Image (cartoon, rainbow, N blue to C red; front, side, top):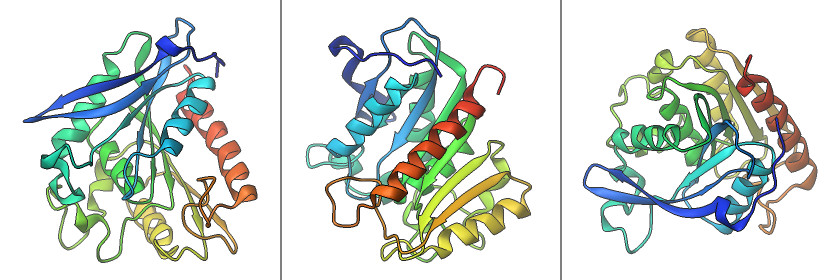
Length: 244
């Protein structure tokens, strides 16, 4: 990927219209003309944090145009919880980033952490241009996981049945000591991917807990963070290159 330097006018707060609301977000891209692959970064239960902004900027330095939707907050009463998030929101994010100047609308990737990892997986079933999904310790399979998205039309007997509509490869990372989202989520995801013929690569880090990629929190794990970052960049570069 081309590396670009971010300047102030290449980072901005945005609003994405979807249904009856406008969802705030943060968007950044390199200063070069592009076109750049687009990435959508999905936050987890804790909502949009400074760490998400930093990750977006770091990815932009690697040659990506990155959108981070910010769904939840006290000034947005119609999106106060995951259960109020409809599939139309996800499709709107895809439409928005594809229309941005300098974005290659045929090369899109999705990145998500925790509950956002499950959301990234589902979004890949709705946005056909997605070529890669990176899932960090994603909450997917167990009770309280994907079923917490009450407005997503999930199969009640098989919450991962939507994967049959996904065509992009998936890369997952998980710690085997995750106390928030059990590592079995990734094993069950892998089983479902094999059932639907999906390419799924996953890395399990021994002794690592949840949220290991976010510096400043007590579960942060420097070695796992560094390794997953390098593997993420290699995966995105392969899948989102012009010939990928």
